[in-house]
Length: 236
Image 1 (spheres, rainbow, N blue to C red):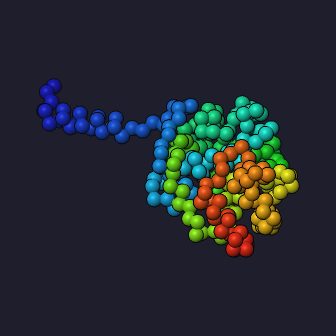
Image 2: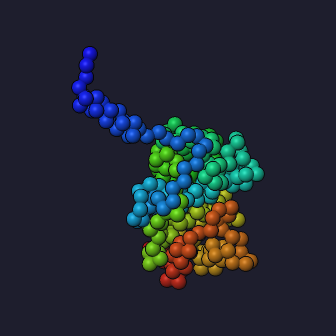
Image 3: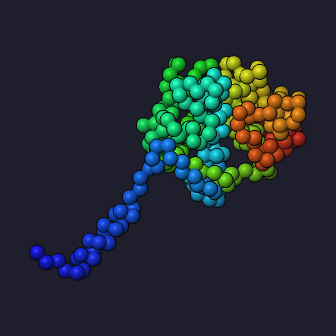
């Protein structure tokens, strides 16, 4: 059977397009680093990818990579959740959050739930951001445009979110660390007005640096908290 040259050319183009458009998720355990991607919590002008560095890593470091749980020393059940390379080693199916153990345990009950009792549950927003990150391929997005604005420092919209993502994993729940509860306005206000909050987040000598075992808050976040305190730390 003879084929015209135009038909052959059409077939070649079709095959080429099919191959070029096929996307496979990264192989397990293979870091995929993208600089400048993600919105870092909304408001960025770059990619709409979730920013691992600013949006996902603090959740794992604060809520999971704690002594007795999933830090390097304890590594419960073989999981260490303190860095990108360690987080993607086990329990993540790239591109499929609902097939990923690390995501599914967030919705379990009793002692099967993570973080386990008496630690506070992750918020719906935190669970959603982890799920979205995994579904996007669990990429190591870094140096993201955070959208942080030092002129925005309301408690409800800004300060409480910083506390939730970076502090409440330790300082929340029924047994908060050092009996300091930062999951509500009253607790945050107390630490803000006695000077301990700023001392801890600025890593001032004589204060325990916070967040513990995690990256220091960004200069923008620290300035937002300082501006809120300077304005009287209102419940706004």
